[in-house]
Length: 292
Image (tube, rainbow, N blue to C red; front, top):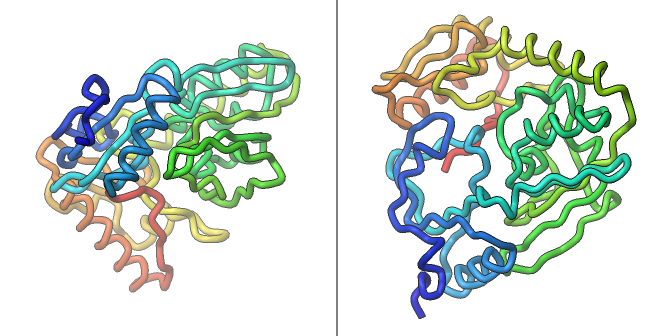
């Protein structure tokens, strides 16, 4: 049986991945799928496992750099409506893994539920945010998470309760193939006050980050007690270029790419930054974005 048999409507071959990522760089996916339901997702995951085809999940594309040669195997996007629903009940919000984090924050504020508003401006999906424990100085998504529904690499659905979950700086124990849904226990507050707080966070973030450029989120994790951006700046690397990729003058932990850039330019610039920071300041920077 062919991999595509029965999945012709949701699987495309040779799909360009650049338009699906914030960097707008990189080659195609061997297979690219947009399942329309959990059943289709499970069937596709099981078929891929049976055929020995590697599977990756693509969220909002804000934390991924795709190599120029592209990605072998199956790339699955949860962009269909079935995976983007958000429901409110009392103090609890439930969101599909494909829902935009920004949409979840907006619903929380509108419903008078506090806790997520410091995360405004962080791009990507709920699933990606949970996997990488997205956060800012005001906190992280993990502290509000009470439950998650995940799918394993064999297509099995599992419930992960709060006691089973571990969240740390930019990482979590949610490492199954798919985060299908997350549930968040929040605190009551006045929607108007929440809106003001959210706007203040957004203004601060917008002023400090190159949000309008062809870039991704932060390239490196902050070393304990230090700022990666500040270290890169101290190493004299703001404005450094390799080909069409440049360390942002606005925030040194961002790399911006112009229309001539390749993924290889970004990778070479990342290597340059890591080696110079290690050489001049004695700090080894750890990558925050994923390279496919």
